[in-house]
Length: 90
Picture 1: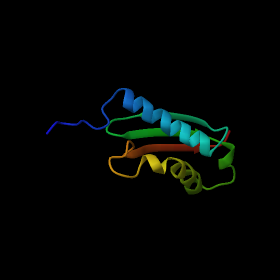
Picture 2 (picture 1 turned 30 degrees about the vertical axis):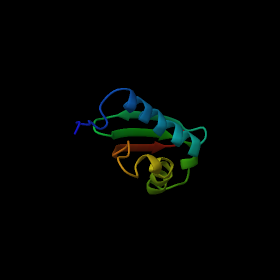
Picture 3 (picture 1 turned 45 degrees about the vertical axis):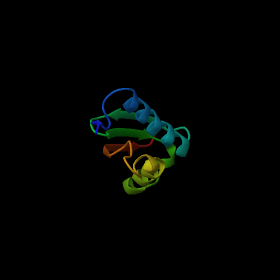
Picture 4 (picture 1 turned 135 degrees about the vertical axis):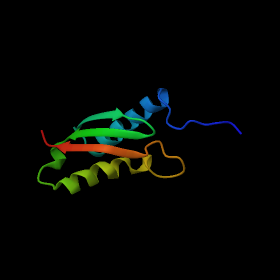
């Protein structure tokens, strides 16, 4: 049995970071999105979007999580947790 290191730093982490960013931009067109990777599938995300105007913090977070749920579900998902999520309007 070979040892498999999940979410080791490198190309896969960079690809996952870009997948998170792209999924959020697709769901929230025009959004400014910054994603920073941590260790073990943990990420920090900052999103600035007009779509957040007038919405509660919970509703803002729900919009972001709805965009990236597919990266957090299933067998061995690439995203284990979002450690920090900042949402604001321009």
